[in-house]
Length: 489
Image 1 (tube, rainbow, N blue to C red):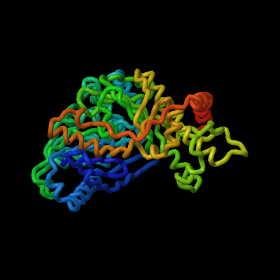
Image 2 (tube, rainbow, N blue to C red):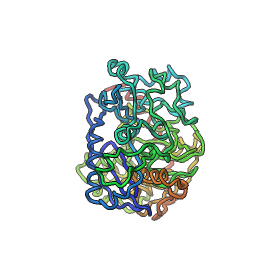
Image 3 (cartoon, helix red, strand yellow):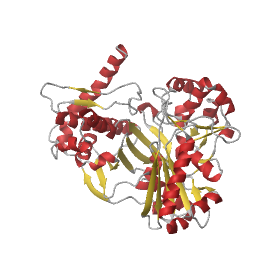
Image 4 (cartoon, rainbow, N blue to C red):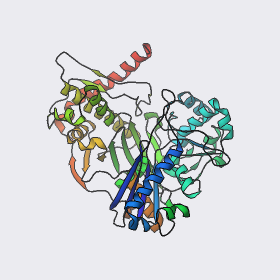
């Protein structure tokens, strides 16, 4: 038996997986985000720990026989957070999260100090990355920075509490902006740019490697016969890829979740930061990935539902089962800025082309199409980066809408595979990594893809019909950007 733990932003989830890779049980505990100032996003690591104890206690109480057989634990987690520890290993301040925007000014400073950061780290300096947070702390909380002896990413801190070991995996470390992504080791130059050295960092291992043993008192608490091995684990997107079997070069998936991700696995480090493309290590050895991100995907429809006072289901029910022509309305889904290809945290979204004849259904369709156009931007940015995609598995809450997936296929030109049982998520991928760490099985043998329910291929007529709206969508970004710059709020 294996346990997969996924430390998300909104909850901590655990799954219990048997030797046939069937999920026997799962449990989750909610988490709270605080925002001391506009644009700030923090969590108390102690809240993660309490959530872990409550979640594992609940699994053990409901499944004592299965928990007794657990031999491996895998960790997945939200990336980019900064947990600062003092000399005694205690937490010095709340964790600054991935979606915190306070470090905008520090991005240029980091790249000034380390001019080759994009080539080495594979990414443009963005405020979400861990390294920028440390420059901010040094400038605004110098007493905290002076007391800092270790910096851990969120799931690495959980491992530290579970095992006493400071270890993290390659995929999570790659999201810090401190890793030499091609060399799969810490970059001394990147660390020096933030006033740190390797002694502040955890050891880095592959996600499939053994990375500590669970403390004996925790194993007893949860009724485990032996102390389970912890795997190196993975950052959240890499863990999701492992759960989907996206471990071979060229395998890809499109996540239509709160934000949107288009992922492609690569057999080497292929940075292309100028298009807003991320290049990170994968959680499995000798493998990397490229990834484009659109910040407001399914959250765009959730926002529209709140504005209209309707449910998402009711809004979608007003649309025909099949779209035969584009909406006359345009929607730009920049509700929280945009990552790929613009790397613009200040841009905001909007509708265009409204008339007194516009209907709510046309606006709902425009929301679905606007998100699809943003994914088309990602597809083209990935092609510029050397990854020309033809198909992808589609996951996330938005994938439940067959209509939305068909729009995505027609706009992006990708054949999109809907999955029979949905995606198990990061916790399931973490459990797979735990299994490999314990059994030393081949990655390809364990990480098989899920069954596909159907494939939606682009309709040639609709693909052609979307060409003009796509051009208008792209023309609106510089116009909107210029208007915002000329008349700031």
